[in-house]
Image (cartoon, rainbow, N blue to C red; front, side, top):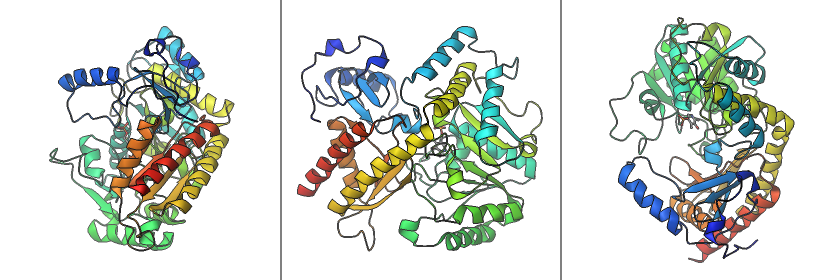
Length: 462
Ligand SMILES: *Cc1c(COP(=O)(O)O)cnc(C)c1O
């Protein structure tokens, strides 16, 4: 499909978002003049610390397409970092949220409760791994879920240590900054940081070549030496690391860690904020690895774009906090909770677990083809609609696997100029990650892959 040129800008904002044609279309330079004007206003009033990957200002979005204020249409392979998993302005979510907005917008669950919060907790108890009594508390953001999980694990175990893994990302609050692997930009200059956080080596098969058992022995050995199991309240792990570059651990790694946690009274917390909520073809990625965490964290995809996060865990652990010890003014807001209930319904109604597998097949087949043509694609990995390619310097794919962040920067920019939004990731910025909505068509994926192919060809010719 070629970029179509020439539709007048004034025609853009007419009609509901649902009428947005599912195709890419570039009609101005990227960013266009209206985006540039908005960007100038923004730079005057929004701090540079809040940056944007692609400063095109979005007027409407539907399905897998973003429409900017200049009338450009982008194939969205990022879904707001894995948030609009059911698609942008998905009708079931829009209807449920609109209805709830009219019925009751806010009471504060810890003042006077409402059913939607309870329903989300029931759905999470049903769909998170493990066949035991579970309870859920709701919060506003992923980082807040991580903070609460650590609070609860500490209260339950009466220990303070928090173990995390290399290449992890857990958020931007004070505690979660200390839990992230990467300093710049997340924590540079923002200290002092929370103490009692211990970072251990992870499993990264492409680089370490270790089996799951070997990598787990390394992680456990490191933690036993540097802190000691007895002082650890919890181990917080992303079953598939998100910002770290969609790092899938070797088989058996996570279950070995889980066994060690169980043997030593350490709460195993799965941060499924990016990998959860049907993204990988299971409700939670833990299931792919046979992992049954003590606590599961959800956020991003849970409410179709509304802010909501959840901590779901074994009932006896979750009940450790005193009454009033958990909560927050907006946590589990009725509109966000109603949207989340709708998301669960739409996952079932639209068969989105199977759709995630379809997206995986189309994307990984296309990316493996590209890997045959371009040797800088060192690794193609992922599950469901959570697929990434790791780019390395030419000729190093079988040896040192040197990170190639410049290629990622070039390709993301090339794709954006041609109407495809692709996110980057990886500790060294050398990963392109694909996190589209599960409702994206194969035609759009193939169109986006052809743009990427052209980008690789142009890069190779430079
Ligand atoms: C995004 C993310 C977070 C933080 O969530 P926020 O809602 O941005 O606070 C934590 N953990 C993982 C794995 C994430 O992807």
